[in-house]
Image (cartoon, rainbow, N blue to C red; front, side, top):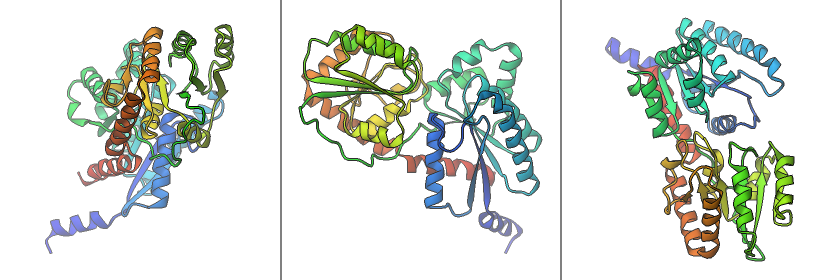
Length: 372
């Protein structure tokens, strides 16, 4: 056996250790924490041969005041794992503002420890944050991306943005869209035949909730529909506006709902609406597609990578309440269209947005870096 063959055999037998930096940790409400929880669950159910995953928290679920403590604990853990040869790749989940500042520290420490790291960009407001940052922060972000072994983005618009900000890194940028499991509950038809409209997300201006409420008021004269606006945020303000517009008997706001309740809501809905002003690639849209709902969304972030207007959903202009009303009216009047959009969306989810395929792509990415 040649030396080269022996080295390859040794590498294939060796356990590869991946450390994943998440903001809030297990059970966190954020989209990336939910995805990483799914990654953790898949790995626990079916551990990958030769790959060991561990997770660390960089921000924590408590008060932001405690975030420096969580960050220090993460850095100490990373140093300890490096000392014992138990970290080969660091996977950094990155958003904007405080997340970016913390992750710049994490990335710099990883570079000093000679740990190759992957940047996984998921923040919807990262473009504005980077463009508006003072020179010192903007330079730190550029260096973090330049020193990364790979950069994961959620769609083509983000690949173009990142590559344009840091020339020379395009070959390191990989598109891996967000993903969700297939639904665990079967669709439940409405007993009264009403069109059931669902919003999932943070209730407020950025997600276009004021425009959604205004759009619903424009179809108030039509019978045969009701809506649920679920999520945390500006609940009382939205409830007052709903009452002012005379929609309280048709539009409910349950507040934040957990995973089990989300699954139940999806199974008992026909349309998902997310008229956001900015996004990266929203989880609620992917969940709606998985549940065969007709999706109405705005063409922001990487949404257009998965929603083709008239085929896998309906796209409406940002901030346009009338367009939302027209789209809802269309789905009320055309049940065949509603069914076709839902079926096409479910098919696309199975082909491109299912969580097990997502997990496999991440494992392939990590192991490819270790083999280099």
